[in-house]
Structure formats: structure tokens, C-alpha cells
Image 1 (cartoon, rainbow, N blue to C red):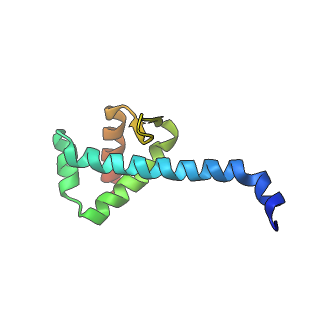
Image 2: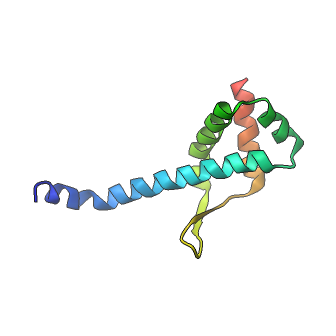
Length: 101
């Protein structure tokens, strides 16, 4: 039972940290999907200029920046759904992409 006292006091914080990590991963995947399925000409051009690794880096960085303002809903099948305005996503992706040049 070594460590139970210590861990018991931190289970809530560990759970929150784990939840944020899952949310960040879901948001980054959402952003990658957004990039690959967008009809926006500027975003399509920005995405076309990047290889897969650079797109992943872009999505991961934007996910970190947008996480605090993004809402997450649990679906009936217990998956997370991202709730964020498309214009916010567009602006964040294009702004970061411009700074990467």
C-alpha cells in the first residue's frame, strides 16, 4: 500500500491532466481533418504547402492555443466531439501558418 496516501491526494489532478491530454489529441485530429476537408481556398493552399509532419505540427500547436476556448461534448457512444466556430479555427490556422514561413 506504499504510495496510496500520496496518490490519493492527487488522483483528481491526475484525472484532469489525463482529460486535457485526451482533449488536446482529439482537437489536433479535428484540426487535421478540418484542413484536409476544407472548402476554404486559403486553407487549402496553406495545407498543400505542408508535408504531413508539418501539418501535424501545425495542428498540434494550434490545438494547444485553442484548447482553453474549445468546448468538448461527449457523444452517445462516449467519444469526444469538438465544438468550436469554424472562423476561429480558420483564423488560428492561417495565422500560425503565416508565422511559420
